[in-house]
Structure formats: structure tokens, C-alpha cells
Image (cartoon, rainbow, N blue to C red; front, top):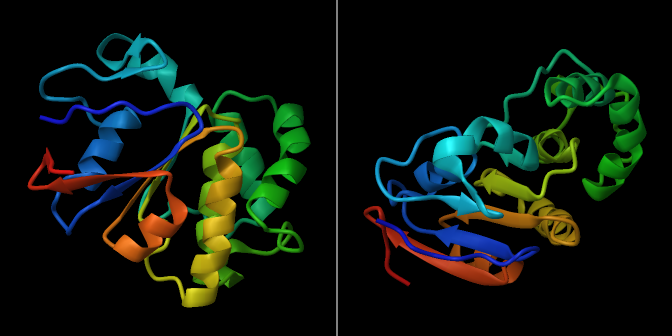
Length: 193
């Protein structure tokens, strides 16, 4: 029973304790779960009737990034770009921009398993934006990161908002307040602030 609006290119934080409904809400917005009632309208499209076609406009990073750790960063991004409907040449052309946005310079040919948690999170964001989506959804993008990595991730997220609407979830009030334009506070599946 949530009702809210988000403007284009805003960075919106979903804040709440574990179990508040943040991840469920983000999965509905990412077209991974169907809303049990009501309507979800993104960019004029009702997701109940067009979720499959709208998925190409969304980039999603779950809390635990689904990475193929035996691949290099570039191999992984080429693979994911093609899964999202891009040609191999389109994906290869997009990789330098994505690498720069996610601050992965120098890691392009490294095996993902050899990367630190912070860099693996960035690879997760890179796979979420390789197809240039209009909306990027990040579920707990800073969980497990050290303070230095959190500051770097904040920069990555702010850069994403130059070209996409960014939604992220966290239970860390300080971090969400530093990173987001606006906060939506959830508790027991309800929007309370």
C-alpha cells in the first residue's frame, strides 16, 4: 500500500529496517515481482501490462550481485549486454563509458573473483547500466563496504543520476542522507515518511 512519485534523474533512497519492504518494492519496480494490488506506472507505462518490454529500460543490482566470478570484467559486461538485447559491437562500444562511470579503470581484464568486495559491487553496477537504462535500481549497494569504498560508491551513484533515475535501498540513514536527493522511509510495508 505505497503511493509515491519520482522525478526523472532523482536519486531516491528507500530507508528502513530489515523486513520493512525496501527490497520487495525495488523488485516490483524492477519487474521481478508483480504488485499484488494497485498500479505501478513508470514513464507512462503500466507495468502490469508491459513489464517484459519495460525491463530493457531498467538496470538492477540486487544486494548480492549475481556475478560470474570466473570471467573478466570485460567478458562479463559483454555477456550481460548481449543478454539485454544489445549487439556485441554495441556492448563493446559502451564498455569504456561504463568502466569510467563505475570507476573500474585498470580492472577491465581482471578476473572478477580476484576483485575486492567494493570493486565487485561496482561490476554489479556496471552490469546494471551496460544497456543505458532510464532507471537504475540498487538494493543495498553499500552493504559490506568499508568507509573509503562507501565514499567512492557515493560518487558512482551521483554520476549515474546524470543520465538515469536512481533508486537505492539502505538501512543506513547517514549514507542515504549523503547520497540521495530524497528519502522514502518504509516500515512494515508502509510508507511512513
